[in-house]
Image (cartoon, rainbow, N blue to C red):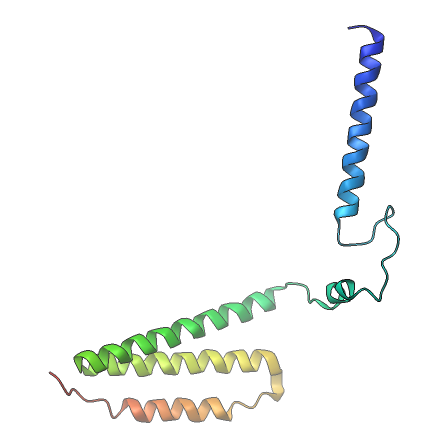
Length: 141
């Protein structure tokens, strides 16, 4: 290769890298040196500023919510089986799952509100579920 071709390839590579760098920096959500400061009146930018950052606590809350939803699903499924088969086993597992769901909801309330959380509602729900569980009987043995 002669010097002209080498020089053209080098210039092309530098220009290509520059264009890619410019496109990358403009694609970022944060203001960069290549982009002017965004207008604060822009609603999309305001929403970006107000959006909370993901953290371990948020993931912990989501995990609690998923466990609560799974416990509710299991409670509904087991109660449907109790109505279908009439076995005390399904009734007990249904109410155990409801108690578990109420405990997860209680933890979520405590997570959101902190020390100011009013957990009496969940405590009474758990007591009600325990009382109902004691009434489980076989009706189709």
